[in-house]
Length: 246
Image (tube, rainbow, N blue to C red; front, side, top):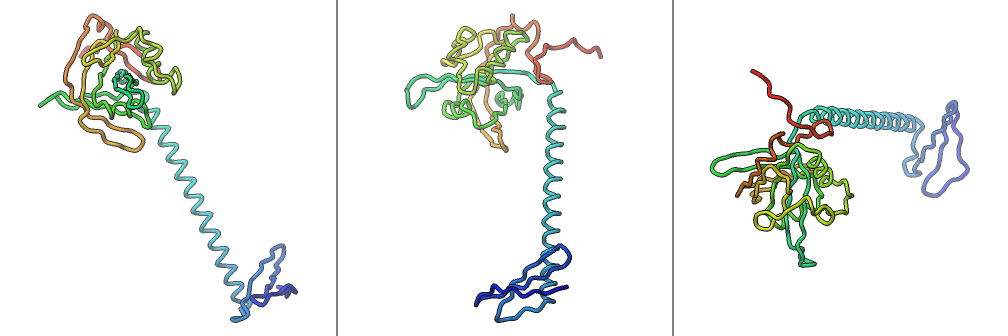
């Protein structure tokens, strides 16, 4: 090992250069303590250990990200194979700025019955941020449109899930497929049934809101129900299959 004294010194410190093969390590030696080359070797070993620990931590982080990504992919694949009813939630609210009605709606596949007693109660999920969620928070009243299994219903669901673009309100373009229901809430004209609801509780879980709502009134149009309700599975819309004999 060759120790070479650097000719560039300051009053605060001196630099020693320790050359071994192709590696060159510089050590700053304080004039007050006059560090020994042995201490330099110890510091070099410490720096090497610290770097190795950082590399291991980085490797673990990459592995964790990979596992999480794989889990998410497997979860999405598993859940997309579960057939779920596709419905449209609609509401109406007076915009505070314009003082004009602002109807809103969105497609969901998470509506489920929570309870019947003492009052019928449902739940559904909304990914946030969402303009419809904001309007729902303000209005607190809305309609859940249960749709028949038909190409028209599938198109309506596509439209209310953003087919026209994130900045486009479907109510401004697709008015013929809508009508006015109870309390002035807009509803889908071809719906099998419409549940008029009042929000009871909203819980935020990660990037979604879970809405709990009380059903106040039900309107039925059973002549549209011959083919069952619209289902969504594997990113496509489906009709109800034949009954299984037991």
